[in-house]
Length: 444
Image (cartoon, rainbow, N blue to C red; front, side, top):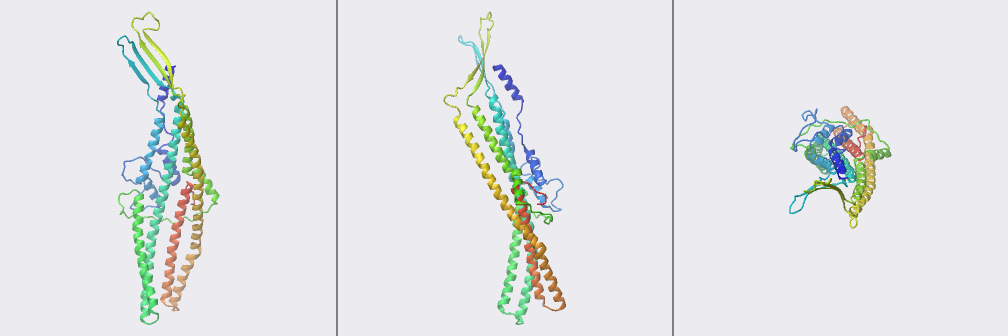
């Protein structure tokens, strides 16, 4: 029996245990979500650009995502958890070494040797490996989720920086208009056409516009630093050139139930929660298999002066050693494994509720901003542009002074700023909705 057990265990040792998931699993999932991969493992702190991307020619929002996935320091540190999970799978498949004990002959004691081989590993090993595999799958799902978080953060940072630069440009134009209005108000005050109060209001309005521009310039600097940090750049004073990408005209609004169905299928946290339940179930079977410990024993003795005996002088005696489960039947660890299974199932239910809330909130924000964007593009901004054209025609005919023209231009500048803010918010809500679902929907 001992020889048979030893041969079986030797065969198992020759079968290396590998994790079913690895870095490539994460890379494939991220490529399916964003079109960009996480790249190969590299030296800590080294910055490199994905093929085909250069900073000099400007980067799109997709380029920014690709750069961050390869260089973001925290994400690279998170990815280091995957080899640890793979090592746990290898460790779960490792078989304990046989124990060899030898007693030399002395003072009438014959030479003896013992070879102890733990054979309970034969039925404990499969459940132990499967539990480790499920834990590795859970880790891979969590890392995929973290990659989605990074993608969303980079997209939002890119959109915020793009909006800040556009706001600074529009506020520069707005300041020029308000300065002209303030100068006209001063001239009218000197000619007695308006009161000192009205002129003061105009000067205050011009000063407010100047302050708004200063804050917009500061926002541009701070948001630029945030984006470069997310991209994994070493210096935070790098000025990035952004390639402006307008909101896609084919954006659609699907029913909320469709988004929820996609979330149940693609959300990495859902996959991780299911893997946690399966791992807990496998761990229960593993702990139950450890109730009794069984060891195969092979004893060898060399007895001198007994060459006439067919079994001597070299005697080999196989046997077993078993731990009797009388006092300890591994009750505590079995109870713990069962409690962990209950906890995993409860966490799964709680996770479904949280994901449903996240998807619903993201959907409601997207629907509201989508409608607002449609209103501004079709009604509000065209009306403001038409008003500017009309007052300019009236001014050229000599019907009005230049003051109404400046006022109409000021309202148009404010309208353009509001439209830019709504479009940026639309892009943010699209990014958040995709993140909540766990899938990048075409047209979103």
